[in-house]
Amino acid sequence: MTIKESALSSDAISIVETKFGVLFFFKDYLITEIFEGMIVGKKEFTEIFDLCMDFYGSNKPFGIVSHRLFPYSVNLFELVPISSRFNSVVANSVVAYTDISMKNFELEKRLLKFKGKFFNNLDSAINWVKKEVEKNG
Image (cartoon, rainbow, N blue to C red; front, top):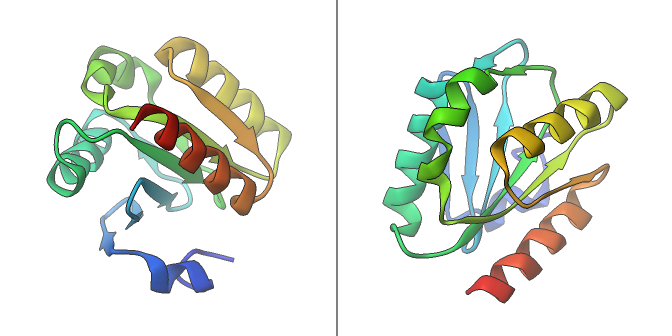
């Protein structure tokens, strides 16, 4: 079930539809749902973080929940050089339902050096991110 189809959708402060996915902004965290088959690289991550800066500002810590319902690719070669822009992100959780998604996330976490955790359900991922943001807020 997508976020739009869930009760969470009504709690979102802002919902932004892009060419590559849907972004759901909440008080202390962002949930992303990237469309199937997308390749997410520098352009897409720059757009996401520009929107985050507009929404959260440059000093407010926040978390990201990647709700990976659909298979897509992350271009780490493009992401690593710009990862320093993500200093306000204090926690990144990934919700996915396949072993390959978990392995991909572990690689992303190591290369990008961020605090992250893998979950197989959305509620646990959101609760963890909220606690991490509270610790850093």
